[in-house]
Image 1 (spheres, protein in one colour):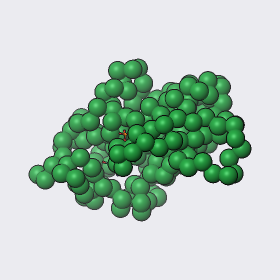
Image 2 (cartoon, helix red, strand yellow):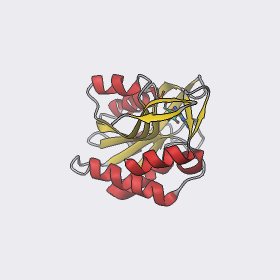
Image 3 (cartoon, protein in one colour):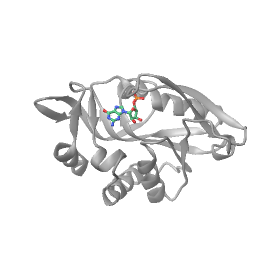
Length: 191
Ligand code: 5GP
């Protein structure tokens, strides 16, 4: 998506010697609502024929994009919670995810009533790096007896293994911008 690549080039900041991209000005801290609405519409266009019944993401950074995609597809957006809270009913799906950005393991949880057998689930997230967040969501979908129709990602870091691994296991992964390389000299996209 050309507009996303241009926005990354304009506003993105490369951190940690080229392993982390900061796009907090529009995607996952401050949210550019109009722009996320455009991304949501593009995701809806890509999965228009797939009879999606639900969007699934992980809190917190995927939620804004999940809502934009859910609004465009007219389906609910569910986010897996990172902390077990007292208002969860007890009937839960849970799995453990390794965090790329924090280098720790955390448990994610979805209440059973929000992920059902027969659901056709589209995974949405802001970034794809090593693919652990998506693998965790696939595990929750499998536990629910639902079906994963694919994953829609705003920014895939193509130099990390997640995209290759997930596509090799047969998942349809649609990334709106794929970064081939990033370092102090700039960012190159894969087309
Ligand atoms: P993965 O599980 O694919 O290794 O990492 C994906 C998750 O880590 C995403 O949900 C995202 O929140 C976070 N993440 C991975 N790489 C980056 C990055 O370069 N920048 C930001 N802002 N988040 C990232």
